[in-house]
Image (cartoon, rainbow over all chains, first blue to last red; front, side):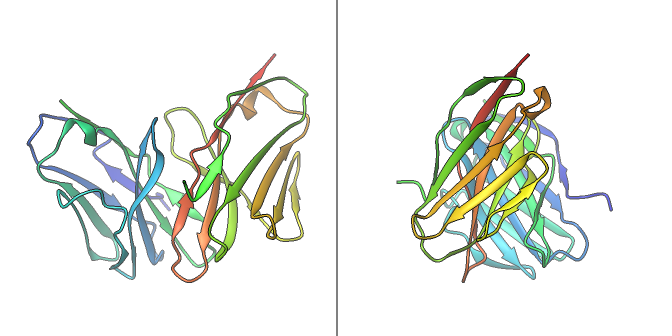
Length: 112
Length: 110
């Protein structure tokens, strides 16, 4: 298994632009999580899905952030419009029945 | 107050030393507990689950105290390769929500 796959690995964009982060979970995992990591705030849970349905999006910072999971093998996290304070590493993780979380390599986002 | 609290460190200890980290959680409905390890510029990876009776995996021992809402990790005979950030992780019982502490940085010196 290739593990959780995220793209892009790095994204540099200008303030006001739309940013789309992508994630492919491990096949057979029914939970998908999006986290954001910064030095100041650590790893913050943004949203998670169970069987493609959003369960808790209380961690999504603002309406500028949205996430979708159209099928079991794909999810996106979108920021529109982006701001410099959105700069962080965004991780996607998936989980199966054994409760173990497997993370992707993350997307390093820089908003100038 | 954060739901999962950890001492950020850094802990700087010599090779071969024993080091212990603590973590407290505030949600009494928490059901499952874990320690993850994160190397610099890498993704977090599961180190070990934490069971009520305590558990050991080689040089690593994890303990859980539900009454005090407290989790610990003990590393014996530390190696240079143990240098990393250690993240305390809590899963809620009802909602399957998984919350991470901010991590404790460990640096092992020769």
